Length: 324
Image 1 (tube, rainbow, N blue to C red):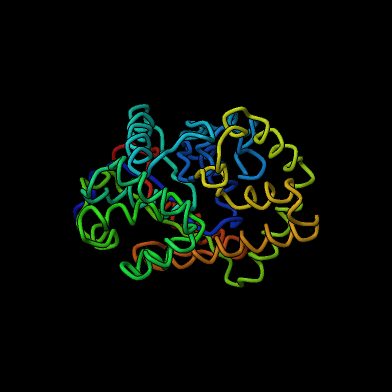
Image 2 (image 1 turned 90 degrees about the vertical axis):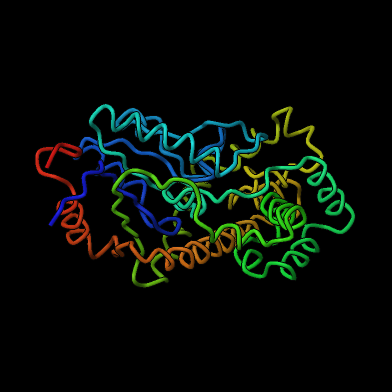
C-alpha cells in the first residue's frame, strides 16, 4: 500500500462544550503540536470568557494560532480565515510541528480544508441596498426572502445572522443562483495536508446539555457580564448604530448578555436564553458534523482510549511529521 506522502494534521471537531480545547491542549503538549483555532468567535479581541478562549496560561503552555486577529467591530470572512489558517499551518509544518485544528465553525473548516468556490465578489452598492431593506423590514423578513430563493442556505443560517443573510442574498441577486449551489461546486485547491478528522460528541445528548449549563454558570462566575460591559464601553461599539448586527456580537451568550444589560430580561431569563441559544448552536453543529462522512466519532467521556489509538495509528513513527 502506498503511504500518503503529505504532512499530517489533526482536526478536533465537535459541538460546543464537547471538550475540544482541552484535548487539543493535551495532544499538542504530548505530540509536539500547535493549535490552530477554527472558531469564528475566538478571532475577536475582547471575546474571552464568553467564547471560552484559551487562557493566557494555556496559550503560554502551547502555541495557539488565529486568536485575537480582529477587533470586535471589524468583519472577518471565511475566505480570510482560510488564507490566514493555511499560512499558520505552513509555519507549523516548517518547524516540524503537528498542526492541531480545533473548533466548531463548520464554514471555517470547509473553507480551510476543501477551499471555497469562486462566487461573486462583494458589491458595496448591493450590500447597502440589502442593509436598507433590513432597516425597513427587519432581518427576519430578509431571512424569509432567502428561504424562498434558497431554502438550503436559509435552513443553516439563523434568522438573526445578518452578515450571512446579507451575503446569501447578495450572491443570489448578483448571479441569479443560490449561494448553496455555488458552495456545492468544487472550490479552490484543497489543503495539501493529510487531515485526520476526529469528532468529539457525547453519545447522550443530555450530557452535552448539562456541560453547556455548567460551563455557562462558570463563565458568569468568572466575570462574563463584566467582559460584556467592557465591550459596550468601547467607543467603536458604543457609536455603532446596530452593534448586535456585528458578527462578533452574534456569538452565543453575547447577544443575550447585551440585551440583559439593556434591561430586556431578568437574570434568570438571561441565563435561560443564553443556555438555550448555546444548545441551538450545538444542534446546528451536530447537523453539520453528520455531513462529514470521513470523520471518526468518539464519545470524549467513554472512548478516550479508542481516540488516542486512532491518533497513534495515524501519525508516523519517529515524530509528528517525521518521514515514515
